[in-house]
Amino acid sequence: MIPAATLTLTNIQTGGEQSTVADAAGRYNYPAASPAGIKLTAKHPGFSDVIVNNIELLVSTATTVNVTFEKVGATSTTVSVEASAVQVNTQDATLGNAINTQQIIELPSYGRNVAALLMFQPGVTPVSKC
Image 1 (spheres, rainbow, N blue to C red):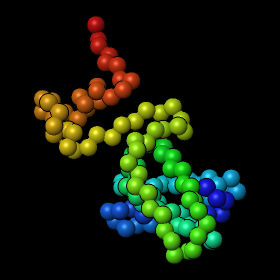
Image 2 (tube, one colour; image 1 turned 90 degrees about the horizontal axis):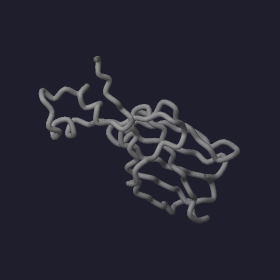
Image 3 (cartoon, rainbow, N blue to C red; image 1 turned 90 degrees about the vertical axis):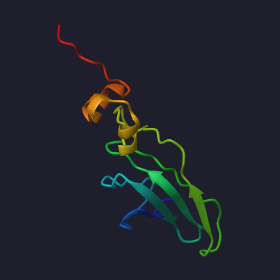
């Protein structure tokens, strides 16, 4: 990432946008981004725009998206990248997993008890009272 690059997050469903500017080290942060499908647009004068589509943000899970300006070019040139890789939390040691409606419907569970689904999450151990 280039220092002072302008980055804009766009919620694909609502069209809502949040913008920020990369710091001197090229880092950027969106602490209050909505968990949804997101498009990231990065711009810097003298470089081609970079668009990263289909970023899936999850609740309480840090996501890192590294942006690389491919080449110096005309400002009308756009490089588009589809983000389909699984996001790995490298920011902290928290564990989290989002369960969507389709997973709840398809999982054989008596009464569709969402709390019972937590037992299938990594790192969860049942506590039994003896």
